[in-house]
Length: 173
Figure 1 (tube, rainbow, N blue to C red):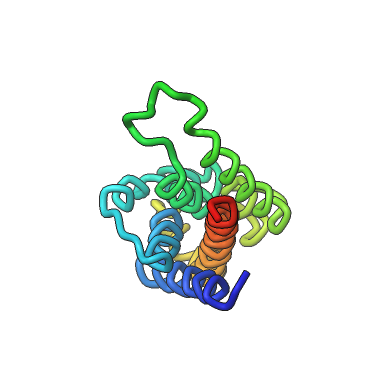
Figure 2: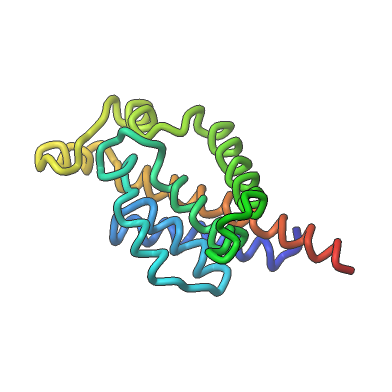
């Protein structure tokens, strides 16, 4: 990967981390960081990531919201279009690249589960809709930890996207 590719990855990290620290919502922060670093914007896709924070709906029940945001960014670039909806094969590229993201994430963090990540980092799940849990999350360093995680996922996502774009450019030459 050349210097510009590394710069994009670093920018994705910095933006996602900053957005998570300032605004919350790991899914939106990661998605926005990646797309902005790549010079893209899509407000409808950004809005659709709102409910994916903290394991979907702040429940911790699903996988990490940052991972959701990364998969959404991959889908924005390589996903199946509406006009291809009946063509199942058109979804494979985004699915394969999203699987790469999951595998790299699991390699780095050991799990994709928001609840398991919170247990690992904070000693248990903290329901952010409960004010006392929210305050405890602040004390335990959740904003810094989760902003770093969002940044790392944004970096991994940008790396996967750039690697795929390089492969496709090499094939077309």
